[in-house]
Image 1 (cartoon, helix red, strand yellow):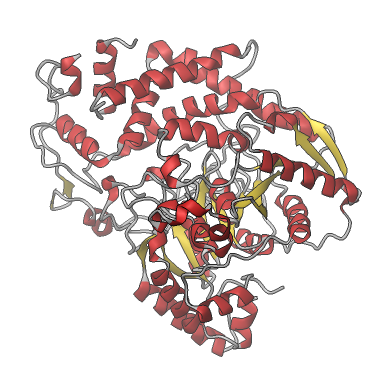
Image 2 (tube, chains in turn blue, red):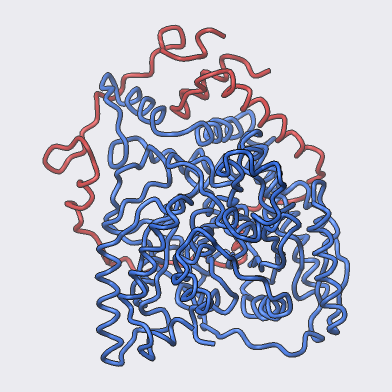
Length: 517
Length: 107
């Protein structure tokens, strides 16, 4: 809608950009943004305005404000990964996906907050502080808050965004931008999408280039897309997907951008319900919502079957080993010599490296590096690393079997429950939390399949709950078709933020979608 | 449960430190957690490196397509001389456990 408005001249690109920038300022308490590129964004908006006035927009995304997670390299803008190791690091180049967005004329507002180096499931462990879920400040959440919480400092009840792309999810959810990039290694895009009530798409591994995305786990990372609706996700996907000669893990198949068809009739689809996703800790509400969704499909004529993915419960353990192993390797590049933080220790190269890394990384990152190195020791390699790789194959094969038996799309919950209050979340340590929260999203990364979170309904506490659809490899079109049908059925409510100026609210409420509908 | 020699070895390999008991506990928990893997029967299963294993890794022509960005690359380094990154003296191993300033000394 906003793209159509830009083209029709109802709103100018610079005006839109300024409104978004001022909204970022007024929602600063959310801590969603690490860097805001005000000057650059306004310049981009001006350029876009010129193009629009000539009747020559570059595409659907021309002039649309977007945000990018801070682990993507952006030329001229600080890229920190929320870590002391990269504070002050200004990349000399744009990540391929960032470049693609800019080439389409999108206006890059800034870099969003995350867990340090994308490790975590709450967006609470970065050096710039935790990100607050915009829904903590919504009328819907406040209404449902228990009476005695009013006597406490009203600030202490806020809930987390989920992670690790929490900043991006919060940015889209608080209506400061129309789309945001995140990354997804174990659920890092879908988890915060579910907690913040936005659409989070994890594309198939190999579809979108990872060049410029600071790597966590090379065999599982993908750039993720966060938007307000499924149509927008398809638009962004269309401009990002495709082979990149700079990333040899992108496939060479031709990708055809598509518009998600409006499905009138779901009866041709078979929806699978994996029983293992009824995981311990799944909240009653989420379970009920999941069942309701299954019934929705059934009564619309679709075939709904229970399926089994027997190795699901090992995916977290497997991930734990493979992730720490790849992290140990990927974090080795941070030695202070070529970029980033450098310690003042000068006795020897090794001691300088050690001191730099001691000063630059937080506990979570250091912990994973050490665990990873442990699993990669000669005496442990077969026992842990190779074993985990074998289990990975079993997990991936589970999916192959299920999809081979006629199932088109799997329907599962995305998170165990709605967002936890920050106070509760930080009581357990990062690894335990990740292990608990990633259980429903992780296996998808193991198998490299596409998956999408669709916000479904509000919980008893007034917070979003989302459901996840998992599709076949490279079948994003089919996946998004089903997701869009579902989205239309559930009519998820718009967030009602009280703390932001009324007139801003009006503009953004009516322009829910970025693309024209 | 993990021997001090192994912990020391890890600190040297990784060039990060455990810092405190919490760090060491974290590792112990991680190992315990990972031990669950052994419940799975993986006889006859090949390890999986990548989900794209069924596709061929492709080659490209050996032509220079980018480069000449010395200035940009040097911009982010703190210590440099002309076009060199400057490192402290190399070939000096990390001091032994007893001499190092590390938490493991006390264990």
